[in-house]
Image 1 (cartoon, rainbow, N blue to C red):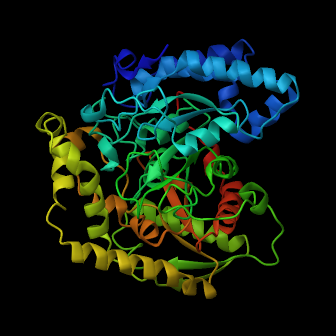
Image 2 (image 1 turned 90 degrees about the vertical axis):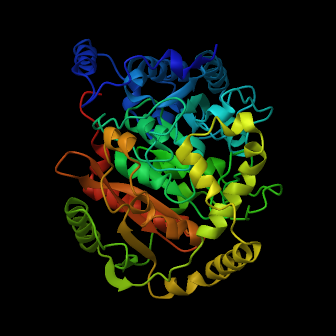
Image 3 (image 1 turned 120 degrees about the vertical axis):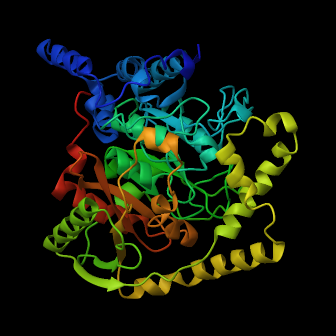
Length: 495
């Protein structure tokens, strides 16, 4: 049975922190001595599954119970595939009983952003345009997750067609930040980040064109990894711009992000931007002994300009932690590259056939429609010139890493806005993507890890980036910081 989000969304307008009833339920569980497996990271749950002290059926059932209880408040899911997930969990347990373990994701419940195709299950991109769209085949990344033994819980809410950073524009209603449900979770992968933060899945996939994995990860206090452009196939994903689009994990720990990325990466000959990135395990590589501490480059301009004071203070404190861990720190400059023409034209090219149908055109949210059509008149010569500059920039950016190993910046300039304010007047989303878009343009591997909280109690993210195919060094430093600072161990109150 497939349960639509509309069947679960009653009461989704509740504001403030999650209701105390959920905290009471957890207290009752603790008093009864119940072991809540949703508290486990992917790595920890995987170890228990392998040791047969936990079954995938138990783990999946626990996540489905949380979804039923909490999704009406968070609105993270559009579709929950409960029956299919339980069948997959039982099959995973049967294989484990026969000592057939596919890897660390075997039996782990994962959810997918709803722009990632799933055979026989609606993929809506959170738009009325695609409300009844049912793909015939899985996207390659979904195939890889299934081959790794993952259990698919369902499809996650998002900003319509991934073209925005608030997630208030969705045919299925706004997504709410688990830390404070008055606020947006960031976007466009807001459902993915909110679901991970609220423990409605062990991990999730999101997509990132300008910010859409890292910004919501920062807003929701979780980890978001955007690997080198093309390292994981974007075929079978409703696109914005193939030159900018990435798919990657949102998780509760850096190690979990490496585990999921290991499962989904790989060359796809049918994906025009896919690259060969090697078969080495990122999880293993990030833990290899290092001859020296990484040299850190701090990109001051424009990344540190106009920061919210709480974000500025948290970032400075995080850099101090990295210094204490032994890293050298120096200021560097990241050359700007203009790629808005590329992004806009490629987005318009995908939507033009849909917009030609008057009935479908009428189903777009007006703001989404305006953004898509803003690139309608971009000359072809401008598109090709910007695309050429993007490619040259990617080919030459390696020179920046002769003097440093990684780059560190705040993930975002400002905390997330409220849902009420975002509905009343669309915010200036350039502030949401300023610190993240350059790394999509260059195609560099980049991660956001929690690094503190605002005085209002909203999470803050630290962004660590590396050279092309430098995922291991990015993950290694992020893992070191996570272990030292321990921000990732904090969770929203009441859940």
